[in-house]
Image 1 (cartoon, rainbow, N blue to C red):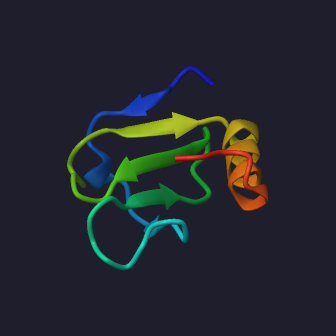
Image 2 (cartoon, rainbow, N blue to C red; image 1 turned 60 degrees about the horizontal axis):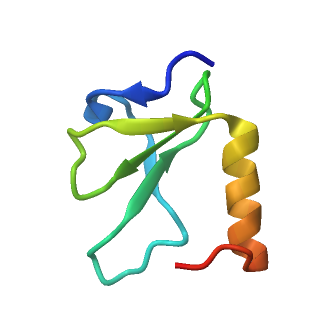
Image 3 (cartoon, helix red, strand yellow; image 1 turned 30 degrees about the vertical axis):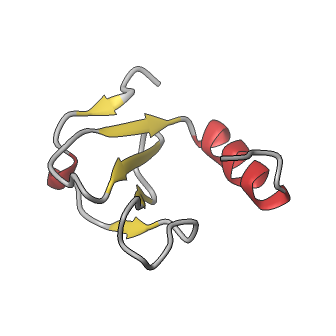
Length: 73
């Protein structure tokens, strides 16, 4: 995967808020499913900002780690 960022994430459609983001507003992460070259992730407070694009295996490992509690804030 050569593409690691997308400069204006608002041009992509289908964003969803991560289930790990709270409902209080504030710090929210949005992800885009089924993107051909990985998993784009953006800050919901900055929809016109960049998105980071993670390899599917890397993103899956991160989410699995969150589920089992191996990552701490």
